[in-house]
Image (cartoon, rainbow, N blue to C red; front, side, top):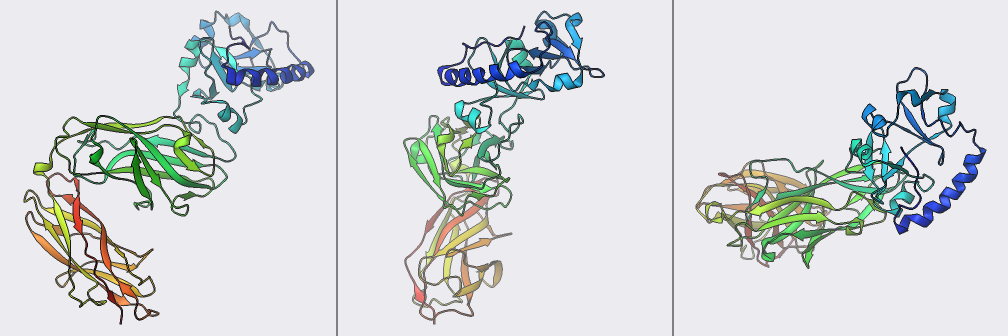
Amino acid sequence: MLTFKKKTYNQSFLGFFLLIFLIFLFNIGQAKALSPDIRQVKVPGDNTVYYLNHATYQRKAYLNEAIFLAYGNQWSDVKIISPEELARWSEARLIKTASSDDLYYIEQGKSIKMTGLQSILDYKLENVLPLTVSDFELAQYQAEASYQEAGLEKESGLSLSQIAVPSSPNANALVPGTHDNQVMTLVFQTGTEAASIQSLIFDLEGLYNDDLIDDVYLINTASGERVKGHSSFYDRQATISFNQVALSLAGNSRLELKVMLDLNSVENTHNQNIRFKVMSSESIKANLQVDGSFPLLGGEFKMVDAGQILGRATINEESLNNNGSQQKLGVFTITETSGQEDIYIKELVFDNAASAGRFDLDNFKLRLDNRLISSAGQMVNNRIVFDINYLRIPAGGSAALIVSANLGVDYQSGRGVNLNLERATMTGNNYGLSLNAEINNINESFLLP
């Protein structure tokens, strides 16, 4: 039989709920009560059977017949009461078992384990007393991974959950020397209040060489754009730091992010492995309290030595020999150096390390000989992003790319241009893996006329 037990909570909950229970005693005395012998009830025209807890004046629906009978109940125990009488009993929202201090929120056959007293306060459950149920009954509820999936919502706040990484033939394998490897997918959800996230920390576990990790970054799944930020590594943790504009969420919004890993070319890594984890709410620095079913565990990925069969690329900036102009901002030669496979260039991102800004240059072009490869309208934060539909470099071959631009209508004479290649995204033809590129920029600049 379901009973209320006051002494099975851990110490963090005990004093809190004892105080609430005293308040309940005053309120219950004022309610119109049925006989304490009436504990199994239903209303006319509805087959749902409820348990009534007279100590807390709560009702709880039985999910199925097996639960009802498992308590030793008889169908003759069920009494019919009016819908008005049933409505006077509040719906049970928190349950526990006699063998554990864990509290679970329940709603419509779903359950979620509460992570602590702060979650009770955040979701305004401080006035809800838990009912003790059997382990069998608890197991009948569908366990959910997040508070929101279990039906819990709060006025404001920020939640973090994860979804499974899409499967692929090599879903559990990583190859050193490859880039753009997806290791997790995270979802941030806001309540009514806007959120601003400053940093996100991943704990890294596994038997891996620290030199393997080149970079960790995020991709906005909806837009496909890389989230602006930078990564740092210390004591087997990866921290991604953002400016607040780059990772801000409006109220009642959802942001899905791919967690991406770039790997350096390191030998003798076969059977090494790595896993990403978000350990707790303290792993996210934000303006709001973060809720989630922590820790969030990414998949375990094993390293596969395959560098000898993959393509490799070197990108060298060529000297302009003091002949730079808006028609030749820079020349960059891409060479496939392995001779193993053709490579396809997907994106090139340049930055200007000198003083010319977005109003000085526009209408950027990327050309191979006289063939237009890609164009970009303006510099944004001194960065030029070329999205490339098709550019193939044959195995062992090379291509010299020229970057040009127009002078802006309001350009200022004497502004400087020093173009550097910041990032290159490329894939190999044979295996479709995103490949690393060795980038060699030179410090050479010129002034606009």
